[in-house]
Image (cartoon, rainbow, N blue to C red):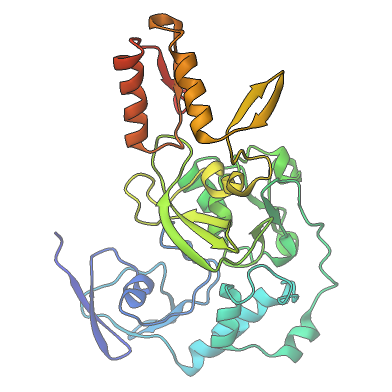
Length: 346
């Protein structure tokens, strides 16, 4: 293990590993430095310029891009820093949709946090405001909405798509005040190579990317994704007896904090009106409801008519490991065949 570096931040002596940024060292020690474009899962780029700090002997420095050094003395707030941050924040808010009350990220928006911490001059912003933002809402994706009127060009979605998902379907487009995040040909997101993993949606600090059906859960429970055999960790939110949200468990050993489209957006089947809640038996050509005892008795009777290679089983990822073990044991030991497959392999 590398020897820790000791530095001073706002009069407090802290330690951090070599290569750690000042921002991450401060946050790890409960010292808040305002920031917007930095994310612990991604490389730092220093776009937003609100994480500036003063290092003794230097000019104001971007803390997310500056590694810690032995003996470094850092100040996170001063009259000069506060003024620079305020101007940078005003430039971000200037081109941002003000309709916070109707935004799915209201009260969970990092831009709101910055505004509360730094403060903005509403008169200055109104005087500088350009014509009303009118970029059409991109609702082409089945599972999330993309509102570029709320985008602050932090680039988190671009880096997420490149560094985590490896899709690279979005990037900065156009120039100057016309700069926006877009896909090849500035088409709707549904016409791009986006695989709807939702990784960018989960990391967007504002309301530019939000789930289409965002509902605040009453409580959340950590569990395992029921789809394929990877065993990704998910945190499922429930409200009113229904599953309303799902996001990745950050420290999951199987998925490392990532999810695919099924794990993030595909749990609606739990409360689907088309989901079977009771066994059905075909009688006189019609499927009718039956008790579990009646259904199991019929299955046992039918299974007795087959043996060996006349029989085959398809197991399901929605079953537990123990249930799937029992299924394969039943297929091989009772039905005397190796004809078994699993939906996660198909």
